Structures are given as C-alpha cells and as structure tokens.
Image 1: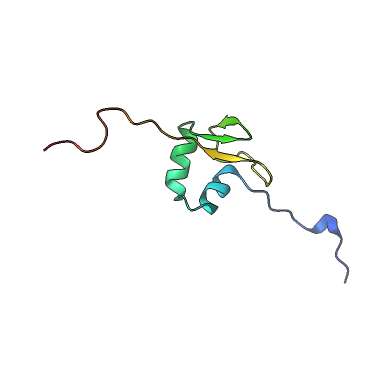
Image 2: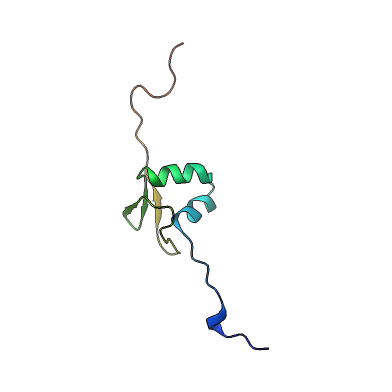
Length: 74
C-alpha cells in the first residue's frame, strides 16, 4: 500500500482555533472576533473562520473600559 502526499489532508487553523489554543474560551473568542477586537497580521477580522495558519500573527486588542463599567456602589 502506498500513500501519496496528495492524499494527506492539511489542517488549516482559523483565527478562532488560534485564540482557543491560546486559552480563551470559544464563546468569548467569538465575541472578541465579531466585535472587531482581533487582528491577523495587522488586519481586523470579524469572521471566526478566517485562516490564521502559523506564522500569521494573531493579536487581541485591548478593549477600553468606559467610566461607567466595573464596580458600582449598591
């Protein structure tokens, strides 16, 4: 039995795969991506299925907090 290289499937990683692999929960990763807070090679992405194979640089931008966010006096 011989196996040719053309029969070998190559798994492509998406931006969602890369964020989940880094330890971010999948639901949160999707929120960040759809919210426009994720960059792949310096370009904003909003689709979790965007390819992001290594060596693509995946960045999660800081989400600025508004003054009314956070702890509030009860």
